View 1: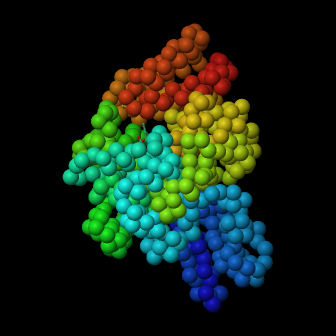
View 2: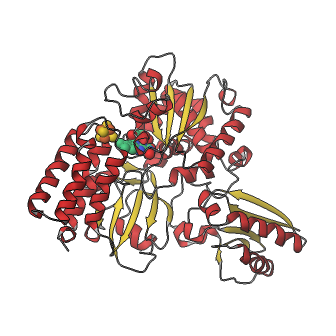
Length: 510
Ligand SMILES: Cc1cc2nc3c(=O)[nH]c(=O)nc-3n(C[C@H](O)[C@H](O)[C@H](O)COP(=O)(O)O)c2cc1C
Ligand code: SF4
């Protein structure tokens, strides 16, 4: 008898003991005289259930979690006898958190062996690239533009327009750079995708290369992601050996190859031009724009820089058509967004959904409120440069323009939940401190302003005229917004001003 099983080897599952569960599973199968066919997958994105084990039983696939090695024997017995178990959740697809999603980008993540190109193909992979090769660059550009796909890294810039800029640039060499620096607090979708479905990203980059005439690419992955680096490196090697990458992509006349580069831990190296400096072997310093990277980017050549999720959305768009993708979402936010729930939240994890759900639906409904049981007081959306939203703004739909209208940003889709013990003055100070720590130092409002900002919060909370110092802090925020060279100094006013505006009572001396 063969027992088929799936268990995540995503970094989050490993941190929670997935390897010990795998070892216990092998022992348990041996004892029971059963042949174990264990597939180590990426994560399904429900972190409160990790390590999540899926077993094929007489009644179909059943999921169990959070597993500990000590649970394996009883879980195996329950699965064999078709009996209930306290850790059983039925088929993954029926778990409410999973069922309510629209999984386009993450359709395969957690379901297949990320190291197997065959598994990727069998699960529908490469259909987008094949169609791209059939239709050619002009049609790809049209399709991506018509899909309404916008950059998922933070700025929300239309991918089709960026690609067209690079396609129109005349140069011997052009590049595709994938931004996998994922520095935002509470975000992990890039990591999950690279660990769970790496060929999807490679396919998306190859399509971008064909569309723009770029023949070489780089994936810049933060050094804190050793598992993603390992999985991607393996996948690139397999892709090259199988003819997915190389001088003839899938046997066509298009060449595309890529390599993995690792960052050294600076938040600012997620900013596209600092990232280019870092790949070039320099210290990551933000470059003034223009010239835009699509005209003069990596090593001075036209370069498309896109986030992991932007590039990973492309194969679906090519396979199913622009209309299919654009039919999801609201307003100018088309398609789906992998939303990442983090902080004090009961059901923390990745929730891919069409744009348009409200913040309240996501935090209270999908996320189930706080894990601690305390009241939700604030959420920070969009990373360390994102605004803090109070409950009063929970009717805001997840949409680029709706968030901008409320003084916020959706950034890379991270939502960090804070309970009623949060001190918003401390959070405002932290934003300035983070900026001072991570500033590349090129421009004065950010380099000097971030330190002055910390001092002002200290003065507001300490001695001196609180009112006058609040006015000064607001003025400083205005200067940083309008005078900074990049969004690090330019956006740090968002968390500071939102804390002042929505939680003024926290800026009163205690
Ligand atoms: C300080 C700073 C950090 C950033 N970090 C990231 C990051 O970690 N990942 C990312 O994709 N974009 C990051 N960005 C945005 C990039 O500059 C750029 O807009 C993005 O890579 C473009 O890809 P997209 O159009 O697909 O979003 C950052 C921007 C700034 C100003
Ligand atoms: S805003 Fe900060 S990080 Fe950006 S260029 Fe200026 S000093 Fe560098």
